[in-house]
Structures are given as structure tokens and as C-alpha cells.
Length: 326
Ligand code: NCD
Image (cartoon, rainbow, N blue to C red; front, side):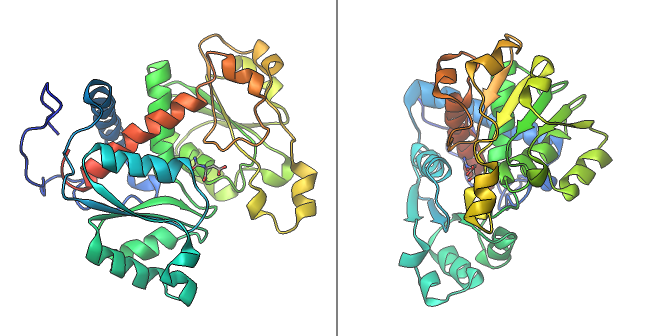
């Protein structure tokens, strides 16, 4: 992308030669460090452009099919805002029950349908692998916005962008992941993506029953990243650069009783942060239920609301890249 000083952009055709053109975004395993740097570089340009002019017409004439088969506020709205700030348009499909999925249509057929109307598709679905299924038949780039307990790659890109913008680096960070590490797709993607950076250390704080899946632990270990498990956030807070807190994923529990046993197990409070560094940040993919006390919001280290805004810039970057405009 080449944005001019008045917020317009130099006329460019689709950059079909770009490695990003037409690419699906399905899991973080597909990204090299260079890819992450590239997305973050374009996201930083988007941030500047939005601050300067609010938007541009880079994606004018392009349509995004935004298909959410699970609840969402941030991911869905930030993709819509991203597309609209770049001059594109959106077909929002928010309720599977109002689409033909309710009549028994497969993901593959729905994806073929949307591929006829739109240029790019975002999908959130409770089934692991659903985005891959859509990608196999859509004929347009498919961006995975969360496939059940699987992955959430665009969130990991925005989480790492947040760390980079807030702390100035990704290398050498000690990142402590807290909460439901078993069912939280954001932490599955984030732990994997952080292995692309040098000297990163991961700490896990989760109830016994909600530990990080072995598959993720093995992948992270194979990349040579140290991983340590703790019982309580207090045990690791002093050495933490990023405290990444997650919600206990109530909807993934087999019975309400199982959820009740772990609900509210960790609550980050101003007292928790007393032992933390001045230049650390607290992140959360949101929504928060009660894992972070609202008193923490006033602490400058609380980065979770800023994180949402960074998300829009990253999604603008991804849409521009896969549509060959960046
Ligand atoms: C997360 C998700 O949907 O996985 N939210 C988000 O995308 N920002 C986290 C969650 O639901 O707890």
C-alpha cells in the first residue's frame, strides 16, 4: 500500500505477485517471523492512516462476507470496521439460524455460495477445522476468526502487535498465560506464534483441569521455548512482561457443575499488580467475566482496551494483504 499525504492512495491494481495475494489465514503455523513482521508493518501504516484521515478507499469495490456462527462482539465488529475504513463493504451473517445453515447446508456449500458474492470471507464456527473446510471450497481467501477450541490466528497477530506497540519488542519477553488454557483458542494460537521470536519464555497459570493441551506444549517445546507451570499468578508476576488473562470458557464445559468448580479461580486485582514491573502490560482478548477486577482498568499497565483498537489495524492489514492491495 502507498498512502498519500491526503489519505488517498496511489492507484494500484491487485498485487497478484504478492505472496499474500489470495492467501487463507487459518492457523498461526503458516506464518514465519517475516510474515508477522510484514503484517505488523502494514498494521502500523493503517494505524497512522486512521489517525490522520479516518479511512481511505483502498478496498473500494471489494466485499467481505463476515460469517459468525458463534457469539462475537470484537472480532466481528473489528473486521467490519476494518473493511469499511478501507472503503469496502460487508455482508454480515451473524446468526447461523437465519442462514441456510439452519436448513442443514454444509459449511462447504455455504462457502461456495459466499464465494460467488464476496471477495473475502471471515468465519467463526464452533467446529475445529471449520475454517479449513470453508477454505477448501470458497474460491476466495478465508480468514479463521475462531474454530471452536482450535485456533484464532488473527487474534494472535493482534496480540503480538499489541505487545510490540506497547513494549517496543517481542524478542526476550516473558509472557504469562492465565486462565482456561485448555479451551481458550487465543492462547493456543498465541503460544505457538510467540515461538517465532527469540528468547521468549512462557509461563502457564491454570487449574489442573484446564492446562495447556499437550499438543501445543509439544510444539512450543520443539521450538525450544521454555515453558513453566504455576499455581497462582502471584508466583510469576514479578518476572512477567505480559500478563495475558483469559476467560474460563463456560460454553466448552460438558456440565454446568464442571464450570462451577473452576469459575472465578483467578482474579487479577490491583494487589496482584503490586508485585509487577512498571513496564509490564496486562492483556485480555475479552470478553472479561470476572478475571480482572474493574479497579485494574485505571492502571496504565492495563492494555486490554487498547488491544481491541490494535486489532482493527491488524485486520485492516490482513484484508489489504490477502486482497493484494498492500
Ligand atoms: C475470544 C474468543 O472468541 O476466542 N474473544 C475474542 O475473539 N476477542 C476469547 C473469549 O471468548 O474468551
